[in-house]
Length: 399
Image (cartoon, rainbow, N blue to C red):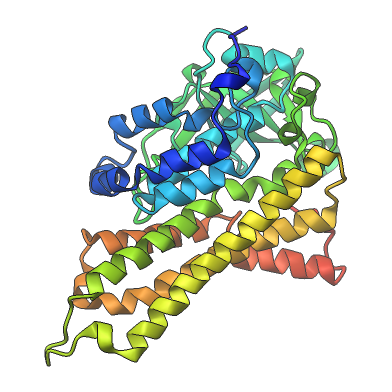
């Protein structure tokens, strides 16, 4: 097993966030190149390794930092102010180590036993054209999984798997870890927002997945012990996966929106109309800037409050019940909505120049919208699910 770090060289959450904040100018300078490449630049990847971002939530027994869940959210807020795709990759890759820490110890050993720096991708949505069959002590799996962010940086992946049931019953759901050397990655990520996340397809063709590489959803929905928490006792490995998963994503929306507001302010200060009226003197501009900045601050405050709450409850062993989990998902969706409202307030102020695809402020507008397209951050889904639960139409943990 890889040697764990000691407490003396484990950074604090504040130190990690400060490292991310210090990279803002660099992220902004590399954003256009990242978008052209359709993945983060190699130098950014190296910077993230050196900063320890991918280890934020990794089990300490494999050299990880086991920081409070939500540290990755704040890191993504800081990075996304310069490059949303880079903030997304830092946060989502870190969270995959957190999820892997919930798997049976055999799976963790296979992932990190020889190399504690092994990185993990994911694709949670049910695959298309799939075939999953029971085999001796495991499963034979074929299918295509979409939207695997940062997969080109990784050596393993976590996949959502619908397990067929007899008599036409709906599939049971589980997740599985699979080495990427047994998969094919198809380069299909040609998009208008979050273009540098490299969120390509993963294809399996009759791959054997042993039972110890799988976890059923029922062990991940509440705050009960997970298979991995037997060897990783830190509270983050008992957090309800699907109640808080969206906090790996929403920080990118908040940071991207904040980056757009800040860049727009600098852009607008010297601008004038054709009639030589300074835009900075117009009350309508003042109100748009104020409303957008307030929306971003409100979004960040809501998310920080919830992270403080569920980490406190987790450390104290207090139950994080279904009503809490429903609210956490609602608030992630609402923070995303507030971020979208912020960039919509700002975009009209850019004028014709804002239509140029190479406008860096417009990139933030596109990237913020892209985060809102993710089902875990989509307000229509999160808000409707919460409302239905409050009215008794759906159970609070409807996924």
